[in-house]
Length: 426
Ligand code: GDP
Ligand code: MN
Image (cartoon, rainbow, N blue to C red; front, side, top):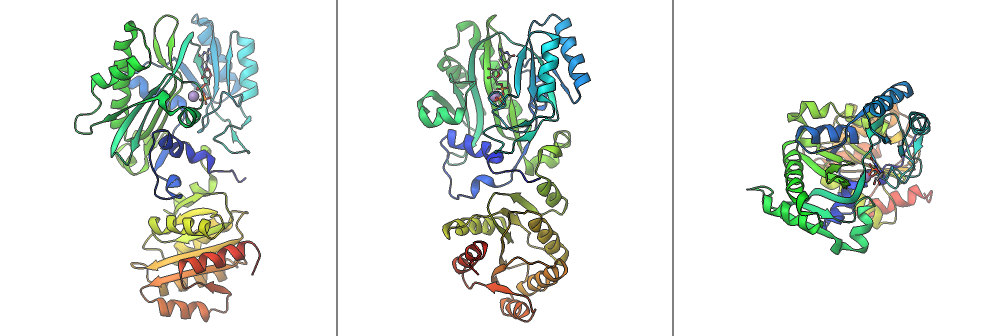
């Protein structure tokens, strides 16, 4: 089943907007650079860094859920929280978080949530199936605050953000009342300094008895961020309790994909059930593919050209169905794999192949495209824009193939052809 992926991957995008980070490309926000994990996994990491989180257990069946809830109630917890574990925020509003006070109510909540198709502002309208629950100790919340760390590329620094407006959608806060988000930029040479954490703690209006704890909390978060090669860390809500404690009630961490080779333990936290099936398939072939919600499939060599292609499709009035970088060394098999993935998306109405022949020669590409299109019996219109090494031979191979390809001489012309073809104009 096709899921609407773009909103799902927009939290990184959104959070960078929160931090006031500028973009250079409309496509830039969807570049696949982050690995996501579940809340319960993120909390496990915080615990290792001495950052206080509520006790709890991840479960995958109703029997385990009841047993875990009973354990917590037996230990003297008056309140238990049943939380859906999916790779998206906004679960509370969508009915994925229930605060209960008895085993019977915990059981009812688990039954309602486990297996549900949870729709939040980050999942798209089809939602995400809940396959894991976190059964957690309830907390006596006094205040709900916000903490976040993200890279500000323009400043070339990490920025530590804090706000008193926690618990709600921080994107809304950033949009309507940006002055409610306090920021400290971190010097990479010396890291987050205790005085900076204290400054944020005071801005959060914490009591004098909480400042020391909050400072240690923030320094712990920063250490976890740096040592795990995070790209984003968000504690929303960061709570104070009635008995003066501080806790991370929710936690979201993304990691830098490109650094995962040096974190074998973190790599294992990946949950393929949360990822788009086509993207998982593409990653097996080392294709850099991201599913989007338009109808013009793109096959491009090079990530920069792929982003430029998406931009020019939008400029021509269309919408890209995906981001796909086939890489520099693409051979016929790789082109076949790529076609296979593109064609599995039922939204696709036209295929736009944009290749600059450098390492990948245009004639080699053209031969592969012809062979793959014949083998897979591709019926959709294929539009190409080719440039670079052996471009003339490449064009000749396409012209003599007996297949109907349309070739644009410039990127804009090819984009116009692709948009027209997707609209059924040609
Ligand atoms: P999100 O909606 O996906 O961001 O999920 P959260 O983990 O942030 O939970 C949403 C909301 O549920 C929080 O903002 C709290 O108001 C509430 N909540 C979560 N855990 C507890 C708890 O232990 N006690 C109480 N009283 N409320 C909780
Ligand atoms: Mn939250």
